[in-house]
Image 1 (tube, helix red, strand yellow):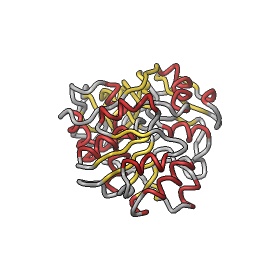
Image 2 (cartoon, rainbow, N blue to C red):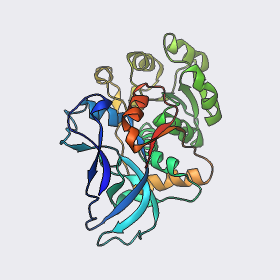
Image 3 (spheres, helix red, strand yellow):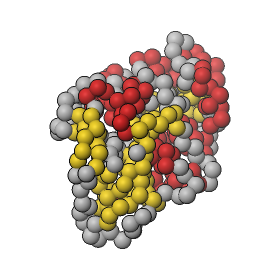
Length: 304
């Protein structure tokens, strides 16, 4: 048997349970991964609470978790890219918080030795979301880019990618994370009342593009006033006000090519994956509560 996190009703983190399940056998094009690390996304909390039910309904008992790193334990038919014992990272739909996960071989890349398990378990979802978002917003050399929640999982990767692509980055975060943002290459500003004025002091003509990872009323309204071209302002967070203000809802396009590029940047020392804290699988509810505080620097990772 294998252990996995499930929930049988929408609710607070208290609905999360660790139960025994069959590990399963990989089908054609799939592998079974012995999971070593899997990071917790804000989406996982929204999904568990039922806030995304109209778009992504749960099927109880529902597993959870979308990014995964571990060792290939079994290989299905038609899989040639991986063998038993290979160390991998990638993504899987709502199944990562478990001792074992069945993953499509086309959703995995090789984990380099220089990358820790915690980093590997935290890169795929946030990294690809940041990469996709910045590409959709056309971020490139000479741009001034505003990144909200810049110290978070998506934000911290977005800052580094934008800097690597030649942009100047202004990042919003609490004061305690300002030195961290400077270390990533961003100019930090505090969020909250007066945000627009603080950003204008750094970019008098406004910003060329903006990525909002929190979509609060303040961040949305302030950024609408700051961005020069409304089509270059997007959010990855859920808030109906964003649509009312004409802010683009950005979606993630995942691919092994995109993930391989991110892994390569990490190997070359050009991309850091910030780990806020790790928890064992048995403490998944505490990990979820930590993410719900909204004050996580980087990612919270479940180590299995």
